[in-house]
Length: 138
Image: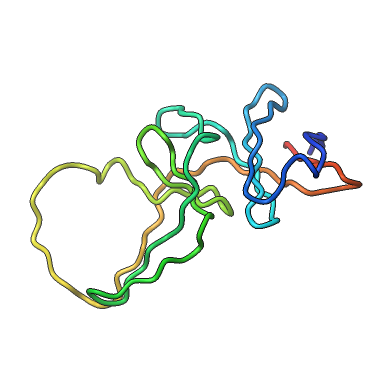
């Protein structure tokens, strides 16, 4: 892996992000509650810039009328089509082959959970070394 200094650590305070170009690739570096993440800036769906996407969380429900908001700020939403990517893994929770408008029977059953889609936003190792943010690119 090739290592690149992309910013001073002081430039990227918690709650901020920075778009950098490394070896010709746009990469968004995020500081979420003091933890750094780096993902490809290009949405694998249609190529939108993920740097401008909303950071949100996940809503989980164990039964009707009850829900929990989890992982606040760890899900990056594409600004074009609202696809969501986990900043820790790059995994998407969308599968375009299943997105269509049809009518289906509906029922409430126990054990429902979020299923990860097949698309992944590329992630990169990122760390702070001697007050600089260092990004590794394979």
